[in-house]
Length: 112
Length: 111
Image (cartoon, rainbow over all chains, first blue to last red; front, side, top):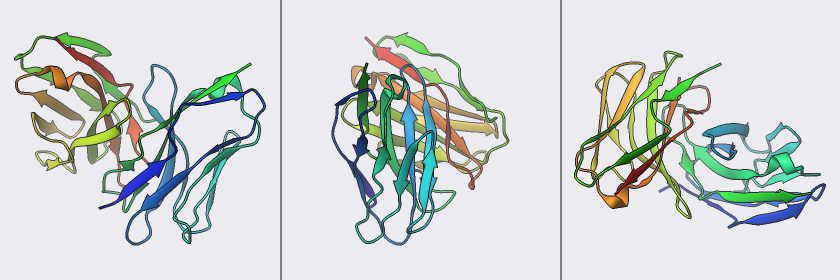
């Protein structure tokens, strides 16, 4: 079946550092890929998405590129802020009506 | 903006109790989902529903059931709560085109 593997956390960075959270997937066909973020005490929010190969999703300074050849969707941000401290989930979905398959999440802590 | 509302943020129940977790969405979405979130395990799908009175088992349905009598409401039922069901429960909805919209979660403790 489909699966998503993302790097284990926690990840601790200083403010303004460069962030990469790795995500790879196993799936047939061409799923859509997502990054969700969960701030403390809240539910998950969509951060960005990509629906086909070579698409780049971006939002709030975060970016991720859908790489079919490496089955990856790594999340990057050039300069993190304390307010980016959260848990980040990579996920895939085959079609609009199918459930999301999530990775296990990566906790990011940014210190001033 | 889509709003997905879960009726309780925190819930404490005793072993053996029947527990109802309620979820309501206000955007007329066909699809609704229940996940549980545990440290180190991420989100795991319990049940989902594509329409009123329809339900599909997810990856970990054992010990749970669901009810969808109205389009906007999707209830998760723990028939006889056990301590291993202590977890964060997240409800989500989608119209099949947009990404999932999540509620804020219900943290259930079973003692």
